[in-house]
Length: 228
Image (tube, rainbow, N blue to C red; front, side, top):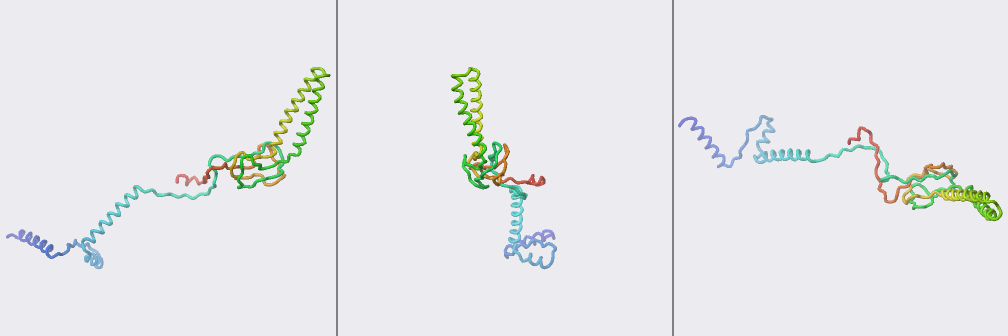
């Protein structure tokens, strides 16, 4: 028998003896410290293989998580709550002095509810005067139609028409001295604070958030954080 054949036979015999004796296979140890080598040497083969599987499973799960998951990026900012859509402004229709304020910020109001009352003393005086002049002119017109020339009658009719127009404008102005809510909702801002304030035509008085409108957060972000 040659030396090579003897070596192969010895190796085969050795492997058979290992299986027959129930000895665990020990992988070759890496060059490490004696303490670590001793611990690894005592570990069964299935423990070390299980650790490898666990590490591989962790790496695979980490790769899938990184590919599929989403990470929230947070940017802090200051903001205010605003109603969805546009608020309904309340403005003064004409010149006037505030006499009474019936509401406060945060109040819930109904459509047509009185919000602010302007001083209407001068407007009522003018309205009464126009009514008296109109009544006098109409009485004169009836006399002119009997005794006066046609030209005088036509002039009196024109005067009555002007008085009627002025009377209608004065009645509308008197109605505008009571400022009412255009819609039902919540009063978000009130621009006037006290009686005696002089209002100019078109001046802002209040803002009303319509009933049922959702509140949205309006944030003010620096330009460097807008992308996030």
